[in-house]
Amino acid sequence: MTTAVVSRPRTGPIGMTMTRSVVTWSVLIVTTVIALFPMYWLFANALTPITATPPLTPILIPAWKLDNVIRLLTTSKHYTRWVVNSLTVALAATLWHVVFDTLAGYAFAKRRFPLRNVLFVALVSTLMVPIHVTFIPLYLISRSLGIIDSIWAILLPASSQVFGIFLMRQFIQTLPGELEDAARIDGCTEIGVVRHVIVPLSMPAIASLAIFTFVRNWNDFLWPLIAVNRPQEFTLTVGVASLQGEFMTDWGIIFAGGAVASIPIIIFFLLFQRYFLDGLRLGALK
Amino acid sequence: MANVRRFLREHGWSYAFIAPSIITFACFTFAPVVWSAIISVQKYNLRTGGTFVDPIWMNYQKAFTGLGGIFVTSIGNTLTYTVFTVTTNIVVGLALASLIQPLHRHVRTFFRAAFYLPAVTSSLIVGMTWAYIYNAQWGFANYLLRLIGVEPVRWLSNPDIALGSITASAMLTIPATAVVLFSAAMGGIPTEFYEAADLDGASPVQKWWWITLPLIRPTTLYLTVIYTIASFEVFERIYVMVPSGVGRSTQTIVTQIYYSGFKDFDLGVSAAQAMMLFVMIGAVALVQFRVLRSNVEY
Image (cartoon, rainbow over all chains, first blue to last red; front, side):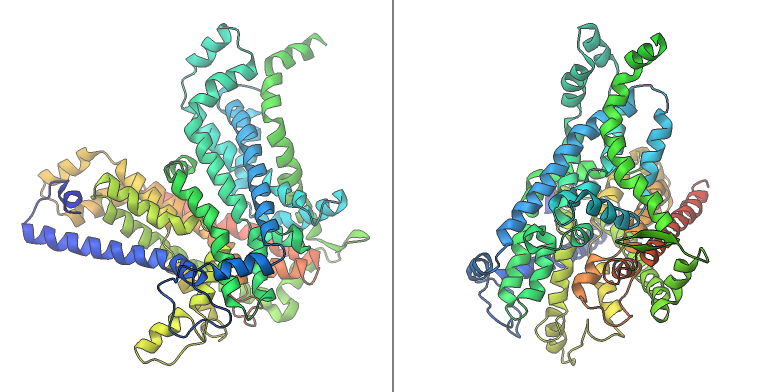
């Protein structure tokens, strides 16, 4: 702690520096506690056996028992199915965007072709369009395709998010062009250039893109809520929201449902947080 | 023929690379936006399709007058929520980024990650957790009040304060993106500026006000715009904290779009409301770009 504070030379009297760092640290610690408290409380409750109404004195220290989670998995018929659905949707969307956003991002960044700028501006300008504008037509399209009430319907708008194309273009633009030319001279096909030159150099951006797409689609709520009515087709977020109606009096199950649903994403974040924070900066419009 | 072949040889790969993205974009974003604009002036029946309404603005009018003008109230609620949330988010984000900036690199990374962790969790689950915190009977908020001897409050079921409670939950959420982006922007400011200011004997507060703040203005602009858009589109937090809605006091633009479209199945009105949200977001973003950008030169 102290090394961190003195690592930058400070001007002014020692007393003032001390006061300042005490204030800084108190503010930061209090804020961190506030930031993490809701999630902590959710987990503390989920890990403490509760069968009806939670106690009036809030549970702040978990009992580290899995009773609620076990009851959730045994009584809520579809919970594991929801996990599978969410994983499928998030992974499919991620795979799609990693492949096709890299290709499109590369084309928009490095290649010259008629209508390039028009198409790119058209794509990027929809970043500001509220997705809610598209829901009624998407609902009608899904109905006529006969995929409403299935995860295929959930995947329709997931396939047309344009953020990734923008992110990949921004990144690939900064790569030097000489390597591509060298690869072509060595007899690489156009696909080969992407595979052997662009992809290896773009790994940090691809990692960020993959993570953002996964998290975004894992957490998506409103469209899956509209697109799907049968409980076995729910994604996890829709399913967790429905627990409140189904187990009105069993708070233990509801807490466990929320906590278990957020574990994968928390683990995911802890593993890849570097790429998260980098991607955030890459994706910011300049 | 030869021309076509040459064109394909030259540009074929380019179009092949963008084709999948452009096709899904055209089908599932562009076409729906256009179609939505059409439905907003139609009476749409799921079985028979749409017929244009007369007068052409009828759905827009209905959107405003329907259910005793609830859409107007919803716009008001959304604006209230947005003003408080965005202002707090920007100020808190700026303050936290400024506080962690002088710290050691590893400490800074730790705080960025700690602040960002709740932001990756689905807003639905975060909202759900806040609903427990606000539970009138056993929630944490009333527990704190009891400790200091204050009567319990019906945070979410009292229509007079429900919107305030929801807004407060958003204000108390750390604006993680803002902290990370402000922090990155501050790290990008050349140290020469600060060294020059040191020579002139500037205090830390003066340096922050005269150097840091003006130079991170593009980031402030970007964050204000994205936070405003996100707040205009608030839905999950409301949906999960007050599932039935406490009368009209907690309706927002998107809850209205959802209810008129997918509960009342009045698709025309829902599309009209969505188009208005679209226009409002565009207008607000434009104004913010204007105002915040015009002051960059000094």
